[in-house]
Figure 1 (cartoon, rainbow, N blue to C red):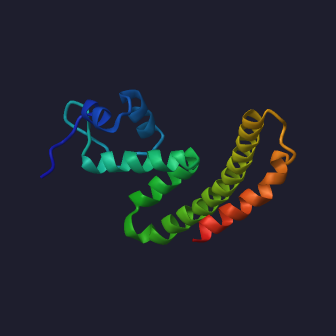
Figure 2: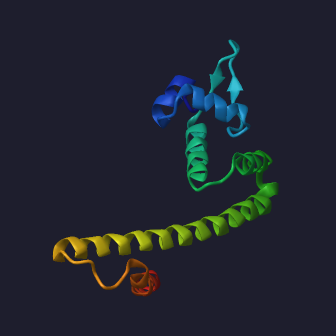
Length: 147
């Protein structure tokens, strides 16, 4: 049998504050938290893994509403696997689109840095502007992604 964990232990092990853990719980983002006879929350290793999942989803830009929906579906067990998968698949598409946008933005930043490096090294403003360098950088990026 697993050793029950208190909120302070969960906070210490996950790097989240007690306040944050309570907020997640009040938002319906931590399933199956029980209370002992004294009214104190009792957690398990499951809750540590769940908090990690919620943090990762949050970092990908998933909304609290979608995280709550996912948690609600998960609480319903295997009968909702298709719905959980669909929710994650939709989010996956949005994350991939964001990665493309961020990659394009990073490519521009790389071109600007390269432009300034050349300018500083040579003392003269380079003839090729950063936005013209993008075509070359995008081709290189596309080749790298495909390999």
